[in-house]
Length: 146
Image (cartoon, rainbow, N blue to C red; front, side):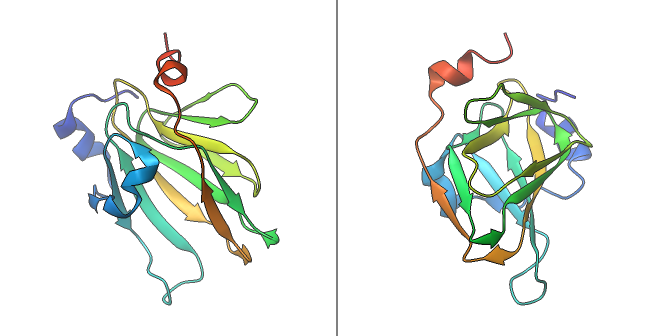
């Protein structure tokens, strides 16, 4: 469900906006917000509600792991995109779950005309790390959803 109006989006975004995602600003085009739902040391699984303003997306990236690992996205509000390298983009809507296997290059973010939130679940694994890569170009992003 596309939601361009911030007040309406806030009503739908049940896990909350959180704070500006300043720690990862170099890896996003546009503004994103992070609301941790669990905290390191309290739980073996890290969960955070990530919110993207319209047009915001993260860079291509890879979740590395020797075993286990990867990421799960649980879409909660608004409308967004997910794309794996070499595959067609997937339209993200509330209620969808995306399982991202380790070692898969991908990106995700909001549609150009909608706010978007998902819960990011970091899947536990051995020797896990995240490798940030190039930005999703404006040309590539602007070709979506026409």
